[in-house]
Image (cartoon, rainbow, N blue to C red; front, side, top):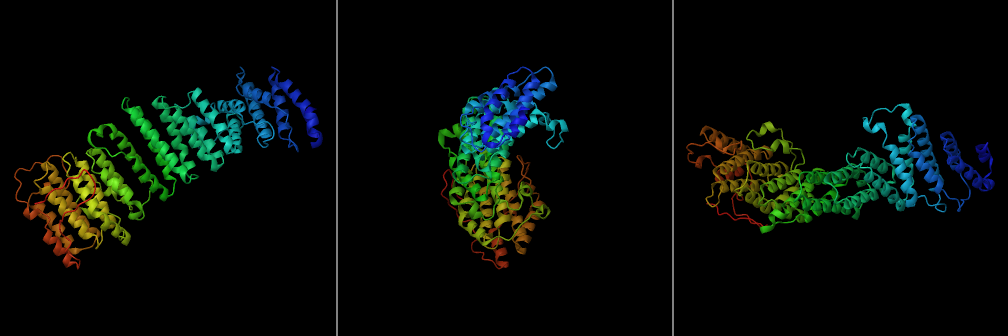
Length: 585
């Protein structure tokens, strides 16, 4: 009868009746009888669905928020009754939200005193959801659709969707508190599920606020266990891609800077902890990569340059202290680089990025040098040839390489930067602590450069580089072990036979194949791939006839109608520190 009277009221007379109506609903809700509480809630929901012409400024909903929230936590012994009470509580909260959020002049439901009750009540019911344990695409049974978890999720979607920019954090703060207080970060399936709901429900232009709140929460948990921080970072990596599509301008670098700050802090902590901190670092790097993956390429270049500017260049006694930070930042750079699609080399490698990257390739740490080569390879490889060129080989025709004609801008880029780049490759090969993997990494980078930018204009540059690598292997002015010298000869042979495969020059192809056969026939297999750590060479004979001959290269160029005057292993100099100049005899 009361509900019928409510529906019959005209808009002008509704306010006269509502106060009495709500007092009766309140009395029923205060009853200990579940049936009366459910009926009262149904009446309140009907009232909430009525649109009023004028708001009632003096009307308060504190009691209803508190009562409906407590109903959401019902622990009635009868499971059916318990679910009915919880459903009624969630519907009641949904009614309060609908009645208040649309008008700023009525009671402010976004206040902490209300949100601290509403949000945890909804999350508490979502925790019991059975679908969290099932496959994402598995169908839900009919009864699940009207279950407390399902309705609570619908309600929180509606709440987040109605939040303006100023109110987003009012919802997020109790979410983070709830996850903290109930130890729901480890494992973090529920946290990921909750934040996905938030990210897909929130107005897209406000999604950055969610990422920012999670970042701040990471700051607040800086002294928490690595497992908790790793889980929070993992949640961040799962949702950050959604925010990336809406991020513009300064907000992009703010997010990257915040991630790098956390990474730096973790590196400092790791000096006194174990492997769990590494998992946290990997989670941060993964989050950074996921964020970058959804940005346009021009922003990825900015991010890579920004990360590179944060990498400390370590000299002298400070090497050990910052080596780990250096490694983590370069790993971050590699992660972003893998999401980037190179078009023109001069765009991908501006001087402000290429200079410090090549400087890092001269690090005294052999693992660091490999990491830098991996970054170069990732950015150079436009045709997915890296896997085919990981190890030196003279059987190039079997590799099925994909190559296109070198553009003029790429050729100009190489002619301009090859002296510095090639000198860095040479200095990198001259380190006596190089492993086979180090030498193979430099080979792969040079081979990719050949595939991408070798042409008539750049051929002489590459031939000069090969002659200089050969001279390095022969020089008496370095401390290279004999095995490394043999490795360098094998690298030269592999690159020499690759060049005419990319730039079709028959005389050069014939010469390179003849040289390989000569080495095989003279039992000089140690001068050919594969690269070994130890060689069993009983009586190495004279090398003269087995070496790459500068005069023969010049003749090959001349026979192809190309300028052979530039084929000379003239000294290359560059401006990077920590290099060693070697005199070639």
